[in-house]
Image (cartoon, rainbow, N blue to C red; front, side, top):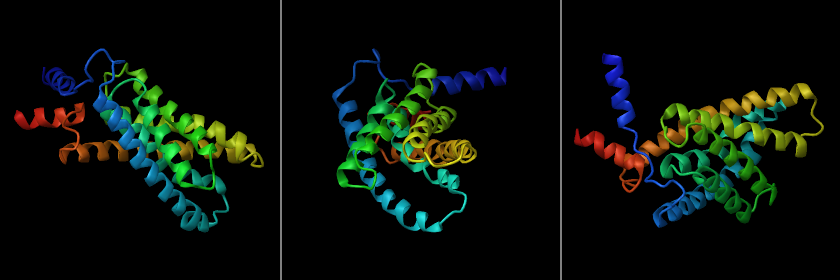
Length: 214
């Protein structure tokens, strides 16, 4: 009885986007654009760190660099958790990639391809649950699924000289980074924004307000 009640309460605490799902509000569009730009600037800054101190580690086993890629997945997770509509994760990640490329980085326009691959992976995770579940487990799954398509792109375009042993070792390390940094990190960031009152017009903010009202 206690377990059933607990599950019911948890389900009731999840606030979904207003229906119909494909009818985006103006505030949804503006927020995804804002988040995308903000993360795009952050991605650009992280690129400087990645190409500087992180690359300077000079890891002999280069697939270990997969542990540092998760930060580039976080826009899709946060965008999906905040707006909770089809396309939100993909759009947020893609905008962030475009902004990062416009600021200038060593990958240039190919950054946009990465944004598309990563955002699509995150979008698939939310779609699996029909945009009806947005808990930490879904966020972690979105972070993990942001990696595989990016892995395919990177081994085909950047790491053609790697052995298949290295290529196959790179994927699980990317998944772990996506799971921890983007999945858990994106969930915590969304919670922090909700607590700060920045997401009151959105489901995460409404969930927090409802819990406080009880």
